[in-house]
Length: 265
Ligand code: SAH
Image 1 (cartoon, rainbow, N blue to C red):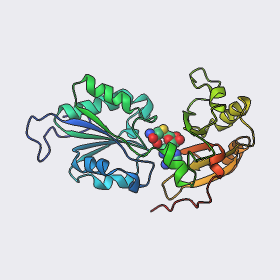
Image 2: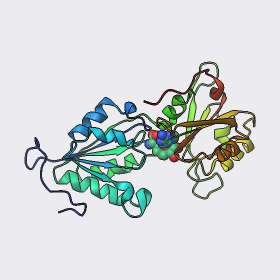
Image 3: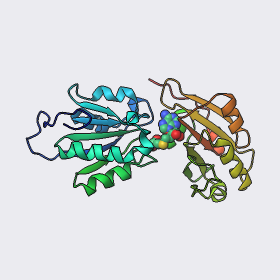
Image 4: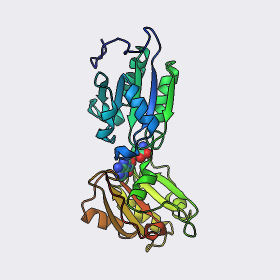
């Protein structure tokens, strides 16, 4: 029996000995209405669902009662150090003939490590496919009334990770170049590093008066938005007690629309 206690049996409807597979499903930012139809179908068909912390819990309502749900946030060491363990889990279940859904927040290929999981499956000979999801980099701003592009204001948007601050040896982002793209700038995983990032953007030539907003818990009942400029946004967010998960948007689009934030169902 596998370490996680799953029974080695094919699911109802799966012929004995048939190979399993892995579907990487994007669960969207938090509101279960933002799951895709295909994602819900895959969930309903799954024998095993491997989830993480950022997945909307209500999405799991679609899972069959006899399916096994594994929360990998609970794997010792956490999801970042546990990636090998997660890869091994997906492969092991699929090789045992089970239909596996790897459910991930947002889109699996946007800072989601879905690529690594796809490679691990392919190496093990496990069929793997991706069902893209609604990424928080676009939907987080949208749910708070901010379009990432707007005709006449910007011809693009740049999405960057703020996981490590600009001066960190592991940072590979050219923040000076980001500052001068003329596009909307969207920062994920950048709550802790927001001060350093804003400083790097202004240091890179971005007008300190450029509007900026932080949207936290997008798509959840606890959704919040705070506004400032690139020069003030770190302080504004800190004073408001904004925590992860949150998306920061920098650019004139922040002030483009007279929209109220979308209601969360
Ligand atoms: N694959 C995900 C991103 C994973 S990285 C996607 O496509 O959305 C995790 C980061 O995503 C968080 O630190 C935060 O910046 C952002 N994020 C995810 N869910 C969010 C939410 N509901 N509201 C705001 N930001 C969110």
